[in-house]
Length: 239
View 1 (cartoon, rainbow, N blue to C red):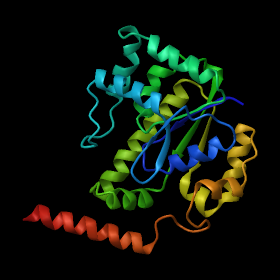
View 2 (spheres, rainbow, N blue to C red):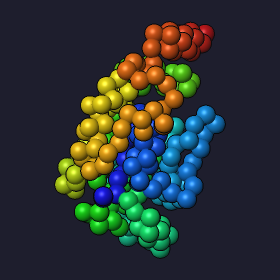
View 3 (cartoon, rainbow, N blue to C red):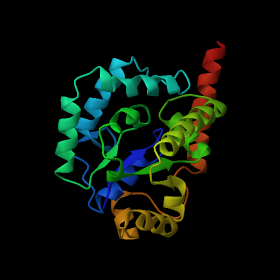
């Protein structure tokens, strides 16, 4: 099996998808980054190296501005100016445990750098997305207060940048909508298995996802709580 690069704009369910892929034998790293409430299944060394790249181009992660292709170009050009040894050594380490899977929500910015060091036919791309309504609720519940219109525009811009990257490099890719993986698991598992040549089952999905299948991840109660968070913040700004 080829390696996998997961591209996403974050809060898309990509951690569940990456953990699911690890069940099929894709290596996530010697250590992964863990948050207070869940494991991201992001290779810790990949995240560290991405941080170096982002720092080198003064990438602003506060999400106050819309996605820019300028930062992608700046990161891409770092190939000519920085020490490549740590990055090449990391790839060599991953190759010793292939097939591997990389996932980091900032990869949509840095992948233009990495692709110059990877063999083109050595990996596939999985684009993990989520419906805007579900994403907006999740953003608000994490206190990332924003309008629905902003959430939609920001994530649609990142999606377009990712799709442009896939097209420009003529890469094999597969789109996975997290909502459909949870609500209609058999269909999405079949899609993933056919694309990657693996045999993941619903049992594998249930082992990495601890909530009920066949229903929305964020339901009416979550929508109500998210709306209250939004209204509270809106009223605060009016004072």
